Length: 471
Ligand SMILES: Nc1ncnc2c1ncn2[C@@H]1O[C@H](COP(=O)(O)OP(=O)(O)OP(=O)(O)O)[C@@H](O)[C@H]1O
Ligand SMILES: [Mg+2]
Image (cartoon, rainbow, N blue to C red; front, side):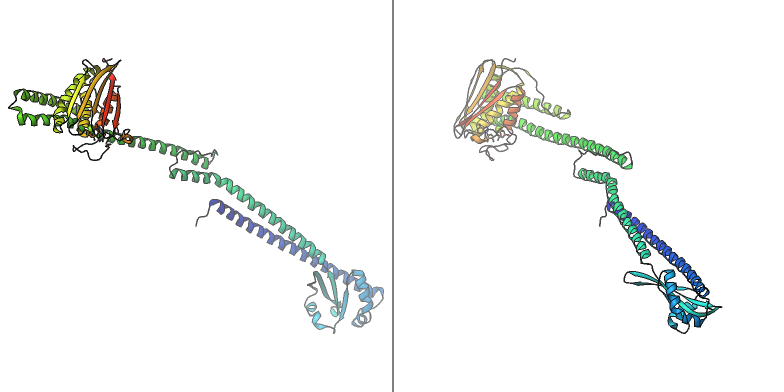
C-alpha cells in the first residue's frame, strides 16, 4: 500500500501534537486537583483550630468546666453557637455515641471525607474533643466546596478547549505545510511520468533555492540531454532508412537499365543466328546493333560501378547537345525486332535536327521504355506511331499505340514505382512496374514534361516535351 509523504507528515505531526497536548492536559489536571486538595486541607486545618478555640471560649465564657457531662448538657447550645460562629452545620457526638462514625476520627487527630451528592461536593470534617488528653466527644463539621470544584472543572474545560483548538489549528496547518513541502515533489513525479510516456517537452516551474529546486534543475538538464540524444538517434535512424530505400531504388533501377539493352541484344543475336548468314546486309546490320548496344550496356555497367563506389547513389548525367529525333529513331530500330514478334509495326515520322541538351543514353532509355510498353500493352497486329516536332522552343516526341489502354482512374498511379495496372502483363515476364517511374525521373531531370492520354481498349499516347535547341 502506498502512503504519500503528505499523509505521513500529517499523521506524525498529529500524533506528536496529540500526545503532547494529552500530557499537558494530564499534568494540568493533576496540578489543579492537588491545589484544590491543598486548599481544602488548609481550610479544614484552620477550621479545626477555630472550632477548638470556639469550644474553649464557650466553656470559659459560660464559666463551666469542660467535661463529658457538661458537653452532654451544653450540646445543643454549643452546637448552635458553633454553627453560627463557623458558618456551617456542626454536629457533636458523645464518647459512647455512634462509634462507627467516629472510628476514623479516633485513629487520627483530624480527618475529613469528600462526598459528592447531586452535583454538590460536601467535605465532612471530624475530630475528637479532648479534655486533658482524653476524648470526651466528637465534632463533625460539614462545608460545601461545590464552587471550588466547579471553578476547577471550568478551568479544566477551558484548558481542554484550548488544547482542541491548538490541535485543530496544528492539524490544518500541518496539512497546508506538508502540501506546500510535497508540491514540488508531486510536480517532479508528474513530469517524470510524462517523460516515461515519451513527452520530453516539459516545463518545470520549481524555482526554490533548496535541494528540491536543485533536483528540479538537474532533472530538466537530464531531460534536455535525453531529448537531444533521442533526436540524434532518430536522425541517424532516418538516415539509415533513407540510405536503405535509396539503395533499393538504385538496385531496382540498375536491373531495369540492364534489362532493356539485353533484350535488344538477345533479339538481334537470335535473328542473326536464324537468317544472318543468308543475308549479308542483315548480318552486318545485326552485328552493328549488337556491338552498339553492347557498348551502351558496357557504359551503363561502368557507370553503375562508379556510382556504387561513391557515397551518393544518385544518377549522374552527361549532358550534351543531342538530336532527339536521332535517338528516337535508334530506339525504334532497336525495338522493331521485338515488335515483329507480335506482328506490330513501328511507324515513325521524325523532324530532323530536333536538338536538346540531354544525356544520350538516358534519353534512349526513355524511348526504349515507352516503346517497350507500347509493344507489351499494344494489340497483336497493330501499329505504333512515333512522331517528333518542334513547338516553339520545345522539342516534342509522341509515341502512340493501339492497345488495351489504361483505365482513367489508374492514370495518376502509373508513374509510381512498382505500380502495374494489371498484375500479369499479357506478353512479358519480369515486368516490375518501374519503366514509367524511370522515364519520369529522367524527363524531370531534363526539366521536361510528360503527358499521358489513354482510351481504354483503343490505345495510349505519351508526349514528352523537352527544352529545345540545347538552350
Ligand atoms: N502503352 C501502354 N498501354 C497500356 N498500359 C500501359 C502502357 N504503358 C504503361 N501501361 C500501364 O502502366 C503500368 C506501369 O508501366 P511501367 O512501364 O512503369 O511498368 P511495366 O511496363 O509494367 O514494367 P517494367 O517497365 O518495369 O518492365 C503498366 O504495368 C501498365 O499497366
Ligand atoms: Mg514498362
